[in-house]
Image (cartoon, rainbow, N blue to C red):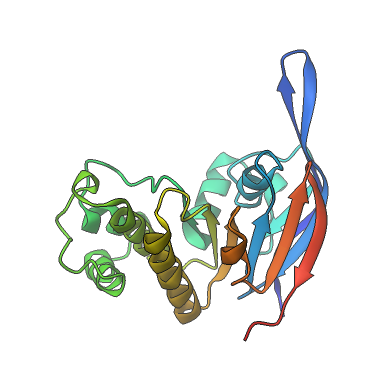
Length: 229
């Protein structure tokens, strides 16, 4: 199976006042295409920083990341943006929908940026799949948190990304709503054959994925592969 993400000896340091704070220290792992993968660890362990680096949202200090066959440290900002637009999907804890656009428009935007002539119809189909076929014209402020995250799910899958990064996708949702969103996430992921990388503090959610790495103090303390029923 081809590797879609390869992380090698990754190190990330931030300046904090008069001293350097090492957030990630010697991180190495790889992910196969189509795999479901979770990154867990306590607050401050470097989970979100690691996701941002893997997705090309932040710059590497030391080490290498190869995403979809491309070494990220060899790309400029425009090239990184193009790679993300063509290959990568995102789901964030705080939804990050555009408040001035309807649900349908929020899902259509990434498709329009790719020049897809059927953007509107694809967006409608995805909103129907996540149970929001009657919410096309609603703005984010008119939707509940769970509904907003379902719009975000539809948007993330709209461009059929090779890999999808989800950062605490249920962090702002109650338990019942979160479970419904996760069920939709895994259903869409299976249907589209996407590689799924989830950052979460929810160990029950992590157990749904094929592999789990645990971070502590910026280092990997375990890398577990499991057989899913």
